[in-house]
Image 1 (cartoon, rainbow over the protein chains, first blue to last red):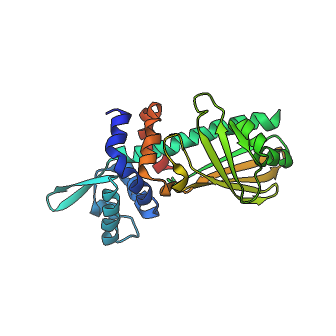
Image 2: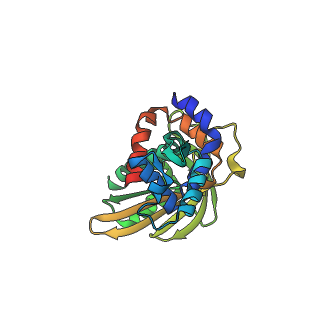
Image 3: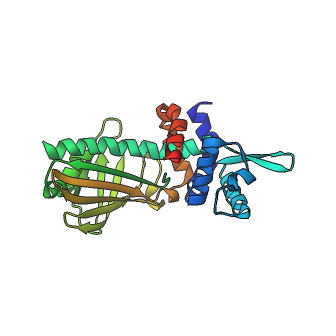
Amino acid sequence: MSARSTAAAGRAHVAPVFAALGDATRLALVSRLCAGGPLSIARLTTGSDVTRQAITKHLGVLARAGIVTDVRQGRERIWTLDPAHLAEARGYLDEISIQWDRALDRLKKFVEE
Amino acid sequence: MNNDRIEKTIVLRAPQSRVWRALTRAEEFGAWFGMKLEGAFALGAHVTGKLTRPGYEHLAIVVMVEEVQPERLFSYRWHPYAIDPKVDYSKEPTTLVEFQLLEVPNGTRLTIVESGFEKIPSERRAEAFRMNDSGWAGQIKNIERHVSA
């Protein structure tokens, strides 16, 4: 898929991505799914101080933002990262970030000469 | 990983007073930023500028000065990525840009923080993202790097 069509398809989902990631537990979940996904809730809860119930709630927030998806496998739900929406949200900040890098290069030359 | 702010730090081999001048004198700011500004960066001032970079000359930018602590902190609000001349951005949320200066042995450490992106409408983000086609291939790698950092 081209960046253009991805952006159009995900347009409505970009703002919630930022909101959903503004939480340490959810960021940790994204990180774990990124490193070792797909994972069940049981696996995602292992080694965490957060209860299974809370993890389920956080996954729900991430799912509504389109960051994760789940499939039922037997009696369990298996969670997977959907990186497209995340990438789109990053794309916006990356672009502004690049512009600041360029502006700072110009400032450096400006004050050091 | 933080998704609603951008932070940059750079050490400039110039005295704090020189860096301060380059940031807070509107015409000096314009010279390195690439903007022609009218007016002075006084506390509470709304200063209008036109971008001077080729291809962006039609764009007017309004800098709304928020805080001025001489030689230490300068901040303003503006509309990030306000690149469509047909859109009236004035009613939309702004981001806050802060310049923090600190004297260091070799010159001045400058930290820039732009924050408040979570309030920017999603269609603006998508618009900006469409401009960013070239960066797409690297995006997935970026996420991995950011979430594992």
